[in-house]
Amino acid sequence: MSETRNHHYVPQGYLRGFAVYPPAYPKKAKLLTIDLTQGRSFTVSVRNIAAIRDFNRIDAEGHDPNALENAYAGFESMAASAIKRVAKSGAFEGDDKILVLNLIALMATRNPRLRKNWSDFTNRLYRIVLETSFATEDRYNKLRKRMEAEMPHAKPLAQLPYEDFREFIKSDRYAFETHQNTLIRLELDVFESVLKTLIARKWVLQIANDQAGDFVTSDHPVVLTSLRQSHPGVGHGLKETMLLFPLTRKCALMGTFEGDEGVIQAPTTLVALANSAVIARATAQVYAYNDSFRYVKRDQMCAGKDLHCDPDCRLRSIDEDEGEK
Image (cartoon, rainbow, N blue to C red; front, top):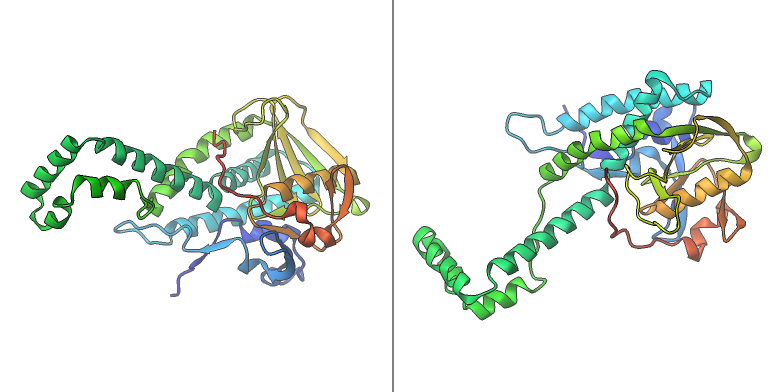
């Protein structure tokens, strides 16, 4: 039996809520994709976006490498069904609420951006440790003596002059690479903490009618922002923060610690503002039902068909720390 290698970090079942497809053929779902790095838009199958080869693959003796991917697929299918029920009923409550919050927590903690941040941090940390450990020639000589005694085959390294060794460890000719198993373990460790904060938030379900237009989503759809300009830092557990999550093209969730819960009809402006927040937090791509959506820029309403060539929406650097608790 062939194994799945194309692993989605944004689930296909979720993306279908923004896609065009015959009801009887969900596997034919297609999305308008606006690529902010390339400045172009195109229509593509949900099978071919927001996915990385072997992203959830584990390397553990005695375990199926795809065990985690298969477990995620089962949960994501249940969560996609919950989203459909929420959108149909207009109520965010009960078991469906818990399933959706678990999905949000999963996407907040399992994504390429956060993995890159963790990997970069680990690389910087280990480089500092290495430089500190061999800050003096005396420390280096002690290492050489140990290597000569315990690792006779490493003599070429042990004979490297201290000045050359120091020059090397300060250079960009090497990097510490974090094993994927470690990154996955970190994601699973953080997941529960993030989920607790999501459960503690007060959630408002925003519903857009046809006149209000559509919500869009992205390859990084969990949008966490500060409600205070004087405190721009964000974290999932911080007060006075807002979490926005587009649920389908006609529904979005907004969660805060201080607000009230409920259901509201989202007017055109609110939908466009939500789209602007999603676009600003995208890693590389924005996904939409079609190009009729709207977003706001400098208090002006903008047409979705112009997003791909909007110079103000071109991709910014994703090398940023993100709150995770």
